[in-house]
Length: 191
Image (cartoon, rainbow, N blue to C red; front, top):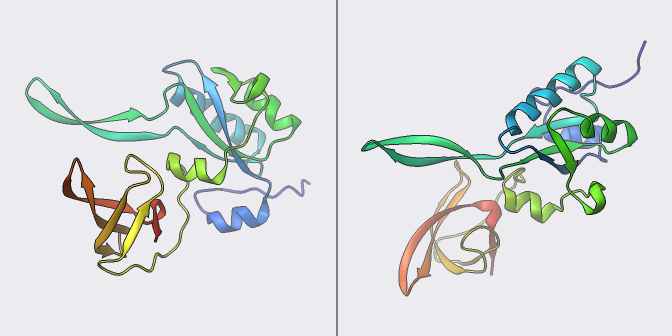
């Protein structure tokens, strides 16, 4: 009988996963171009068959929806944000390294000499992989700084706070004109 804890990330909340495995960090693996989803499926299958839920917690292929015009029609398509890469939240040890490194479609871990280097908290937030769950206590007309994304380092004034969506509408100066932009809590910092 195994005394290994099995974790189903769809059922167990993130904070409990952190408590069970504080050593779990985000790593990036390089894949053959166009094989990202296949690599994700292969890793999920290996995790399931070998019972590695407790050490390989989450597998992500970051995508974003984009509006595209085709034949005069608007169409929403999903595009990979980082083509050729898959992100893994896992506990790094010799066994997990070997399993991931030898998964069909994986070429290497990202890091010097293919030695895995975990992502920093700032990189994880900037990439939108994992968003910290917190409340931002802002009021209308307060000044904020954007700390990530395309408007990074911009300073603006709060126009509206939406606690339900966890977004803030701020007024920024873009090309000399005031422009209102809706941003997530986690990319703002109170001045």
